[in-house]
Image (cartoon, rainbow, N blue to C red; front, side):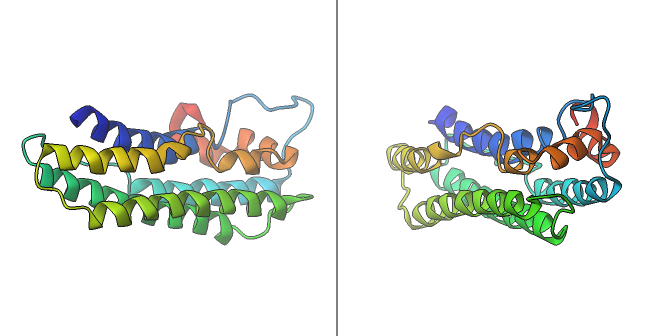
Length: 190
């Protein structure tokens, strides 16, 4: 049981935080060594990286599980899912608040990314509601709640997250690659 509950929490963290954030800025080398990102696109990407970082800060501490206390484990998972939901809102807000990307078809990339975040939040909200309503009295009832959550959250395994939609735009991809802010926010993986 502990392993399954931890898998939900850590899979969720990795999907929404680590994978989304660390792939946001990509490799250190420019996609095309002969070209450089437009300064306006770089400024936009810097805002996005900063906004996504704000959302991810809410996920810095995954829940603690107590295998001997099913109700406390459920409470910790509910709290984490609430934090995850708020973080997804912050991430989508960070992307929207950056404005329309100053590149061709930039709004389309933003729309796809924020739609992906919205769909993810819907799954998290559905899982949260079911978990809040579930009666947990022992290990068996907790295992059922976790199995139900596992089933709902299974669709969140996309490793690149919503940032992949922004990176499909060649101009934004180049800007993500060259962004100093992204490297500062996310370290050497940016």
